[in-house]
Length: 110
Image 1 (cartoon, one colour):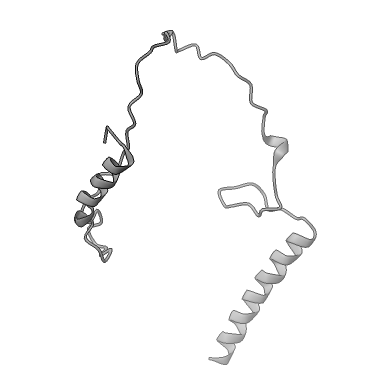
Image 2 (tube, helix red, strand yellow):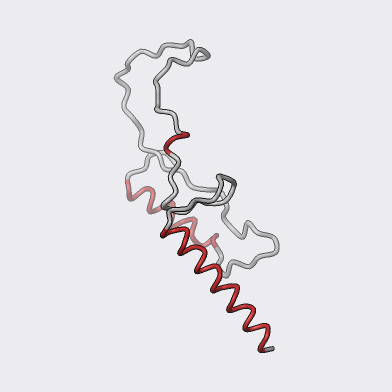
């Protein structure tokens, strides 16, 4: 049992020393699907934004004087959306208070 604890502590210590040395020497892992450390920023690979007209949008919209309608959207997951996980709450009890809150805010569309 003592050997397992010693091995575990050594692995954790090696991780801490490795991450600390990466920070001190500004070393970065190769780019991949994993998150990058905050000190590694790859500005060289980012191209600056250039505006261009999209050729597949052919319709031109004219200005209008119509009023905007303030709408609020909610996700339609009332009840337990998970079959095997008990979230510990019944979200169906939140439907009426949510709709009342949206109306109180001034939402005309929901």
